[in-house]
Length: 419
Ligand SMILES: [Zn+2]
Image (cartoon, rainbow, N blue to C red; front, side, top):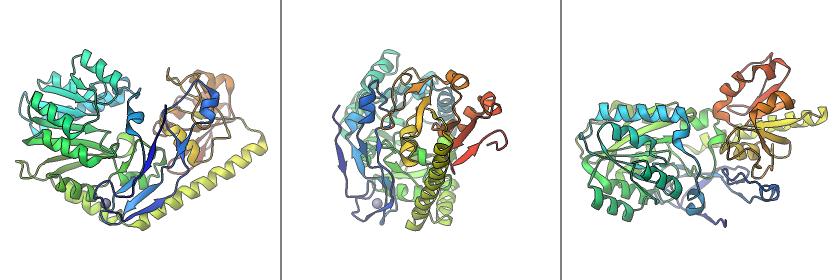
C-alpha cells in the first residue's frame, strides 16, 4: 500500500491562511495497520499529527492529510461489534424521532454508515434508509443485510445521485465522520443538498473542550482531522446554509457533542443549549491560542513523568507490557515514547492477535496471558477502557502488578494506589 501525505496550508473550515502550530506532537504510524510481519511493523512510516489553530475562526485541526482512499477503503471496524455503540445508536435514533419528529416514513441517510447499525433502528421505526460508506466490503455486507449502502466517500455528485434516486432526506446523520473528512466543505455541501427544507442534520464529534480539559491525547490520530468546538462550526454551517439549532454534550469517547442543524429558515426553534455552550467556550477561552499552548505544556509535563518512570523501570529490570491494540495505541506509544520499552501488548481482537503494532513492533498476545506472563508494569493503551481493564484484572493487582494510565495524567495504579 502506498501512502501519500499532503500538508494543507489553509483552515479546513474557513480557508484562511492564518493557521498557527499550537501543539507539536511526535509523528505516528497509521494507527490501524497491525501487521503479521515484524519487519514491516518496525519500518512502518510515521506521519506528523501536529495540531494547528486558525487565527480567523479558531478551528483546531490536523493539516497533514493522508490520502483518504488508503485510509478508509480497507477499514475493518464494525460498529455492530461493540455493544456500547449499538446501545448508543439505539438511544440516538429514539431521541431524534421523539424530539424532532421527522416526517413519518421519511428518508434517513447516514454518512459513514459502516455496517448500518444506526440506520437499522430508523428502519425498524418505519423510515426509509440509505447508507453511504467508502469501506467497500462493509458497504456490500450492509446492502446484503437490507441497508442499501452506496460504497463511496460522500461527494456532491454522490449526494446528487442519491437525491435523484431516493428523494430529499428528512434526516441526515454523520456519527464519527464529521471530524474525519479533509474536504469538510464538500461533505457539507453534499449533506445540505440531500436535506429537505424541513429536514435535520444530526452529527456527533469529539469535543475540543473535553480533549483539552481531560488531556485526551489518545484521540489525536490521523483519522481525526478536526477537533471541533461550536463557535467555528456555527460560522462554517452558516456559510453552507445551515444553522445549528441544538447541541448536547455526551460521554461517548470521554467527551463528545451531538449537534443538530437545519436548513436556514427551517421550522424548528434554536434551543438555549447552543448559546449556553458558546458561553462556556468563551469562559474557558477555548478559542485563544494560549489555551492550546497550555495543553501542549501539559502533554510535555506528562511526557516527563513517563520518562522518569521508564528510567526507573529500566534500572529495576522491569518487564513492561501494553494493554489494548486499539487505534489510540500507536498514538499513545509514540507521544509518551513507550515504543522501546513495551515488550508485548494484550488484546483479544482476532485481527490483532499474533500481529505486530506499527512502529513499536510489539507482538499482540491474548489478555488471558496476563496471569501467566505477569509483567511488572502494564501501560493501558486502550485509554477509554482503563477502568474496566483494571476492574477485571484485580488478581494481577493483588499479586503486586502495576498499571499505568496516561489520561489525564500519567499515573501508576497498584494495590495501594487505586484509580
Ligand atoms: Zn478558520
